[in-house]
Length: 596
Image 1 (tube, one colour):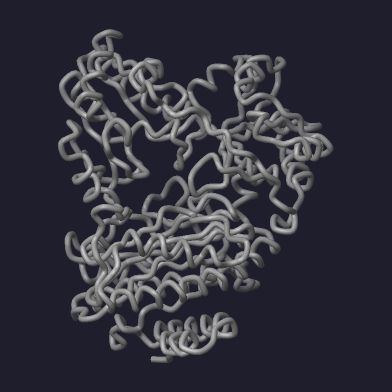
Image 2 (tube, one colour; image 1 turned 60 degrees about the horizontal axis):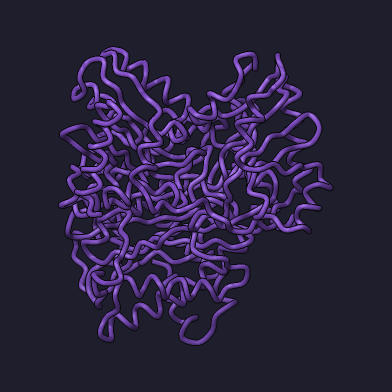
């Protein structure tokens, strides 16, 4: 079926089931950002492939709501689909609810898959919709009736994640969680988020592209633990190991039955943001629900000393892979050119030469000239641009290693860059450096720091539409909570930063159809010092190791402290990478890390 035909089928179903609209959320039953094919309804239905979006279908209108990262991409991918691009003014704000109130008749019914809508968001939606007497109705069956060839749930094997990498055994992690449960009077702790389950049980999987997670639920008891999972994913040696550690395996689909049979006066702790409407309905009213329990997320977010040490080591290998790639790229661009798509494949090849490499941490963004302005650009094999020896190229990429996850963006000059491009690059660099140099008191939150990176860009009366930083997992999701660096004083940006948190620092500037600029390193929160009068202070350790293109830097725009930071950073990069290279590679690195 074409996209127009799929839309028509949905409208037929609206009439059959007496629905005035269908709300389609781009997530899974664990409220995940990264999805297996089974939940990739939005791209199947609309053609839009962005990682964030919400679809609304009424009897005579259809739209896809997304944020500014995908405005350019959305306009192109939705053309001719029957769906209109609806531009969110503020990321993560459900403006489609207000739109539904304006476009649905009073007392109307809005269908939604109850397994994809969190119980907490449902309450918020219903409070607004009640003003027009609109009602949310479970309607996941509508999707199944239309999506005949829907992919099945993944069947990939689950494997052990060695303690030598994790730093702590699953028994140690679970014991820490139990101590918190005992403190808070929690009898059962339900873990819903896939990365939190993988971290807690020291397991990894392949159910979701780029993310080593597996579909499951975990429950920690006062004694023992339960893992609800497709048992075929776990071989006998691993099963025995889990059982020896007091972990019982249950079928993935048994989670609702288990919850429905909780004893009276049971205290159940969970993160309500991750709990689906459908799963929430299985919890008996007599259970005492504690909905703000986030033990695993916070423990996972603060990397221990073993994890931090491994990540620093990984950055050396990742930097060496990038060195090989950019040397290759410069040669190809000067000798007839290379497509963005082929460049992405070659980057994967260079990372694949490094020890402990598993795969990319996300689909690489290789955007030449105007394509660099598409924040989450994806090069197509048949239509990607040819990279030549002029203009700017933006490359945002990352790797999954057994001992860490990387994410780095570099914007480079391939020749004949303009003064405007150099000015904008330097503005972004100034913002990056200001955030990297920040020293802040314990308890400081992401939104309080984020403007450090924006200030030089704001002074030039420009801005960028994405957040400045996201948490990064340890051989887990490249986007992870609890912390982030964004403009909103809520969500991850309202989480206090703590030592061990690994976060990106990635301001940018984007000019449609002309060029995009982003400079991204990963930074590790560390203790800076303690004073008698003002307590503990924290700072960032920049751990990504690869040169920033000095050919794009306007030295005169940098303050002395910014210049010192840049020279010191390049000194560190050279010290860490140069022992592993020789000949022309070492000469290239020395020049790229030269003092200015």
